[in-house]
Length: 152
Image (cartoon, rainbow, N blue to C red; front, side):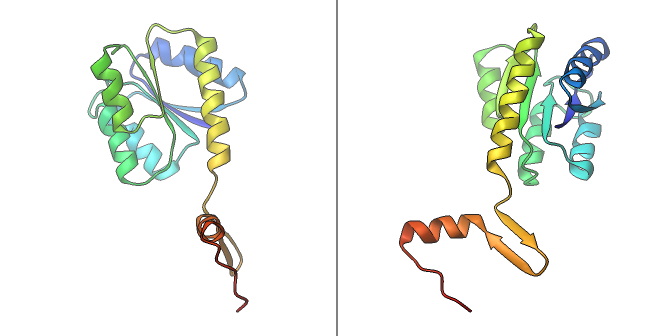
């Protein structure tokens, strides 16, 4: 899985990066919220791990902008902000999971695996092969309505 880690604490970022690489993941580390958002916009990722307290662009703004751009990248918040209001704000902004520092690396790796499993099930809603397209959402709703496919 390709993971983007947006964390300004170099020591913590190196430890997380090493643990995730040992689990077989590819990790891109950025120490700045704006750089992280730019990377996600242009290069994408299978998962973003985002700190809340970042230079130039805060974690909540990174999350909100990825949602507004419809990037469909799951986000795990990893932050020292542990208050109820902080957790609610992160999840309401669009984060898929929220962990507070300090944390156990084994739990972070387990949450990454869980988010990876969910992403694999979501998949693309429209699959295109050559000139042929299949809309999974349309097929599912047609089946619920009792519609039948009509040959061309």
